[in-house]
Image 1 (cartoon, rainbow, N blue to C red):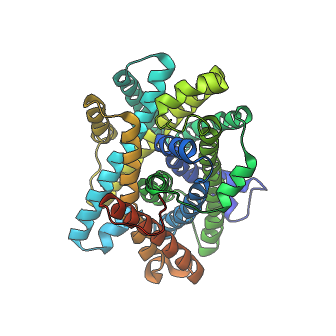
Image 2 (image 1 turned 120 degrees about the vertical axis):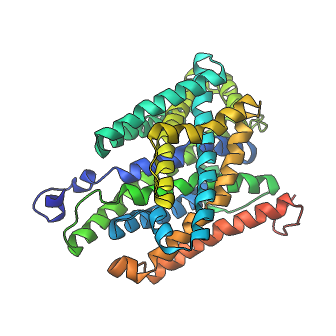
Length: 418
């Protein structure tokens, strides 16, 4: 890798040698929480919330690029920098919020994988969760062999998800004019649409992915001078754009499939189980099986990535490294509790995404603060345009959260109709 950075080797495919971190981080943008919010968006509002998916994806690209840059330039991950630079009480609060977000993440991922397995093989939900737990731990063992085997496994699962939704687009009769209108005409028809929009943002711009990406690039490649660092940052930006563009297209495909299949006559489809059972008579058994296959791949891969992120967050904030099986156990317990309590699985998925959106400003604001500090970033400090866009992205998330809370407490929001 160092020979490629120095220009001694390589060719047109040089960026592929450095690929991996953004692919792993992109899994967080295709997790089962996205399925829940995107199904509700498409079934209830057809293509009109596609602009939210697009906006969230653009914000995600910016912040994942900043996170990767932070790890490459400073040699530390975001959680470590927070621990080193913020007052101790602030660090404890940030860690607590991040742990809640990690548990909410794992709730979505575990439930998604378990629902897919339960529906596809006719298993009880608890059995599906147990199988998901075993599979994710088995994949996590690959990390002991170095970063490349793990990246290949996660990359393969991402490929499965992408191919499944490509197949769905060939099966579902998509209204392409409605798609273009939904992408280019921002609208929030009512308070329910707002809740779903905040869920989409929470499911797309993931707090744990922002922490994780800085750690995945941290010390991964030996950089000998600033010229090599600039080249590595350029390759990293290419990977971020490519990986998250794929994730964004998958999310848009989810909304489009739900809009095509459910909006006319099935607007009440709001649960993954209902979507599966409704897809079979509408688009055929193949479409329903493809849907579940992608859901299982999403649940397993994102659960693995969520565990990696949770471990990095704990290690960074508290300087404590626990065995991976302990970390796996801590974050999956809430999911088992929710299922045992009889809570509606899809409602739990959507609410977990709202929790994530509320927790999201914490790493976003911290990342912006560090990215503009010249003493940390040197010549790679964020420029005026990046500062403006990053501040605007964080402000959009904060504004959506504020409106959501206002709506929850019955405070009227003028621009919401109905």
